[in-house]
Amino acid sequence: MRSSPRTLFAIVVATFAGVSAVDLRLCADEPVRLRSDAPVIVSSWDDLLKSVETAADWQRTREVLKHRYLELLRDDFKPPRVPLALELHETVEVEGIYERRLISYAVEEGERAHAYLGIPLERNSKLPAIVVLHGTFAQGKERVAGLVQNPNKAYLDHLCRRGYVVIAPDHFVAGHRIPPEGPYETGRFYEKHPEWTAVGKFTYEHSIAVDVLQSLPEADGDRIGALGHSLGGHGTMFLAAYDERIKAATGNCAASFFRHNSNVEAWARDHWYVYFKHIRPGLLKGELPPIDFHEIMALVAPRAYLDIAGLNDGPPRTQRQRALMLMKVMDVYELVGAPENFAFYMHGRGHSVSHESRQLIYAWMDTHLKPPEATATRLVGGK
Image (cartoon, rainbow, N blue to C red):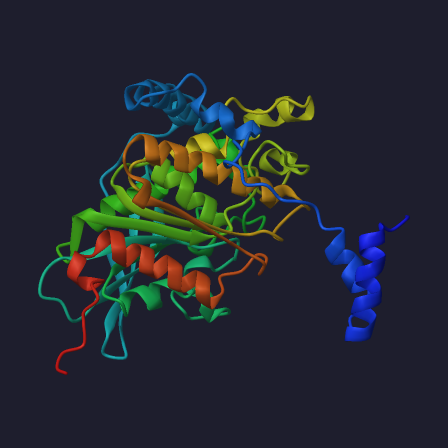
């Protein structure tokens, strides 16, 4: 590449000044950058608000999406609600801070769920409450309670210390209900409920966990949140979209969506944990369900939702699409006048619940479930 006389002269001068010719050439060949307005970001996620211009338009679209969501869950095939018949099996006081109770309750005829319930000992009134959902771990609620394995995921312990009533239920194929074939085997479930879905089952059960919280004299039934990691992360999204009693939610590392996902068949495996058995034939033909994560997440609006994900969690480039997806969900929150109720944080720590993620999650709950004075700042008194 031929240099201009001006560049050659500058190189000579710079050489005497101790600046390398390569450095100077890089400076001399920089493009001229012109001021401009921000370009419109266009993506496949724009279909969320197709033909939607007003909040009233969104409400009509939301009704359609909610119907599609319930169809995806096969919600029509869930069993009837039964009385909770709550039972207490064990009580342990933890360091004089909270009481941990092992409880069980009915989720359908002849079937009971087990959960840990944490209740702070110091309370002057009803406390906000949270449903915490574990990831794919055989003894799920044990880890959430801080009894085994990874203390980063001991959400029940962490939150009780922050003044929350917490329920940590077992997933329906984990903990007290591990099938004979092994944890997370859904074969027997589909034998019993061939038309339902595993996601419909766990979402329905997590909604019953909300019933349990609302039955407690220590919990404020109008201030209930939900959070979880991995399986519990997308479980939180599914629950918040399903049950409007959830006022604040956080999904952490909440799995990949349907579109732009090279491993989409994992949502409808032919063995082990089968999320949505009925969509497998379509997926094998390259056909995706008529609803995706951005539409399910948008059903939560205007209630509070925080999404946390690792850019390097999952197939290459997939989670970068998540950033585009989440920006479109924010458009819905802005449309309904509640942009402060949606946020997301993306990091490079992979499939984790690192310190900064936990701090964001717990602060999000404090902001949206506790009174304003709980998070208020103040000036230092005196001079």
